[in-house]
Length: 175
Image 1: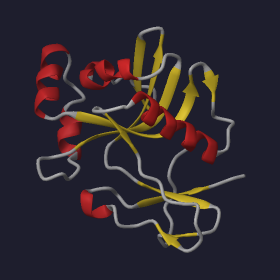
Image 2: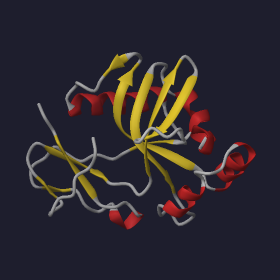
Image 3: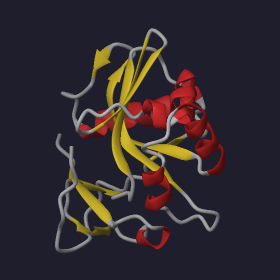
Image 4: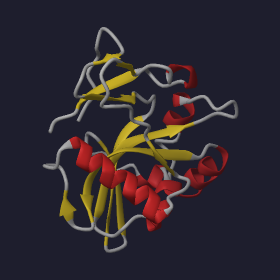
């Protein structure tokens, strides 16, 4: 799901909040050792981000996640410019760029888990399954779990912008 701008970071009852990242929206899938990393428009991004493709060995087979490719600078702030410069690189150039500016995949949704399509599950169930994958598989770089707040009434979903995120992204918490 895509984020929607709101006038206030106050979370309404039944909603959760996640940061809006300053990166590239992407989906990653692993099927029988084949890794596909694509933009939301379908552009193949794997050759530009070999560290993410290589890190997919940590994921269960027949699994797909929705998230954001991001890069942090040495001060811990997001740097979209460095990430953007990586898109045209392939092969040895992409590997050198990965050593200098490691990209991370910040996962915020689980689309498929071990062959089971999860997109019809309510958000809370997908979120619990995504957290379980991170815990059970002990995922580490390049994987990062997107923080989520809620659902709690009268909760503010701000505070992340100091790290370079673009602010809160409220999500309706059905069921």
